[in-house]
Length: 257
Image 1: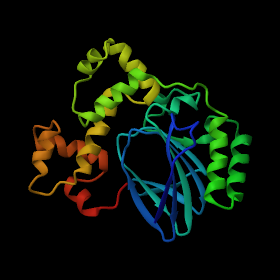
Image 2: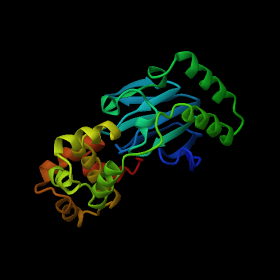
Image 3: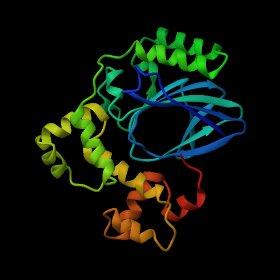
Image 4: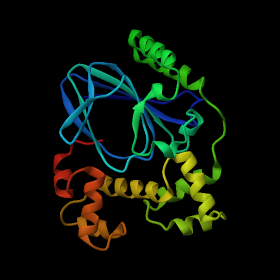
């Protein structure tokens, strides 16, 4: 598979992290791990499917995906291509009328949010583009037409930075206190922008941080303990929900994003 990543225009940089063009010459199945960002996928050609419990479902041409607590298996057939819009962690609420928290664990067609005729026309135009620059220009024009506000929430941005700084290992009550806001008000404000509770968000950060360390057998349990787990069964259960595999299976396979 080929991956090319592009930075958004200046007007969209407060809200959009990147565009990733994915092209697959051969059929391949990838394990997509949970992240803290919403994603909008445009299938440009070929067939791309979601595999769940051995059942394969063809994905729509445009798919909007909220935060998830478990991995997904995505199959790219030969000669398929897509471009993924990855939103910044507080950016997605600027574009979509549906509260982000209602999309937790959801992947839905983009036409669920905007007129079908508008999305069909966008898909038609994307199919006619001659290069990646034209594709991104069309997507950016669409996104710019949907922005409902121009400023992000500095308190939630600070909370997210604090969560990442400690790899998700913190108490939400203490985080709210450090930001001089009640826990209830903080959680409502956090969900409204990120689509997850602070606890769910921190859990995703924690597991991704552990996976990035790619531990060897000798250091694995040390890293597990450093990430707040006091017994292996509890960790193994969380890890399998998150990745769909045991730690041993997961690190041996290597086929994940």
